[in-house]
Image (cartoon, rainbow, N blue to C red; front, top):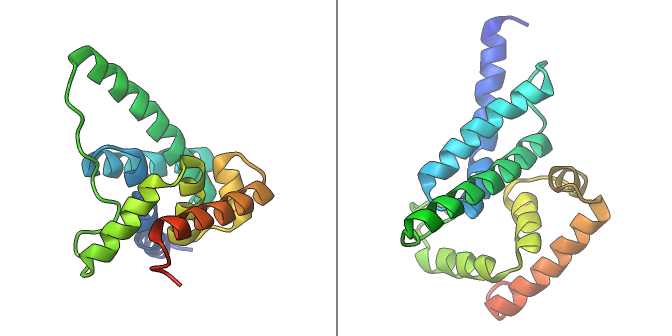
Length: 166
């Protein structure tokens, strides 16, 4: 395969998956800029860890985003503790161009109330498009555990949205 074909494959992969990565990263960061930086760094690290031969596997990228987000949060918490800085309101998870603002706010509010372990799995399944096996790989849990967390998370969401979604 020539360089042009490799470049086209890479650009297609980036275009297809970056929105999923950003959505996942937005949950775990305090600003859009941090989420974007986290995604870029995670893709590059995943590519290095994968060792070439094409784009890295999605679970590897999601796992790298998660790990780097934890490290970033720890650094920021220490910095904020030293500086006694005010908390910065989190960026919305969804693109602000979404027309139905109320629905977006309802879903975002409900997702913020769901336990973190369920929220991760729901995000990776619904918006990340991963299988339960891939989610398990990304989060370091067995696939059946990922499936259970998904099911329990959806139950929590149904309760929180009080039947808005059928």
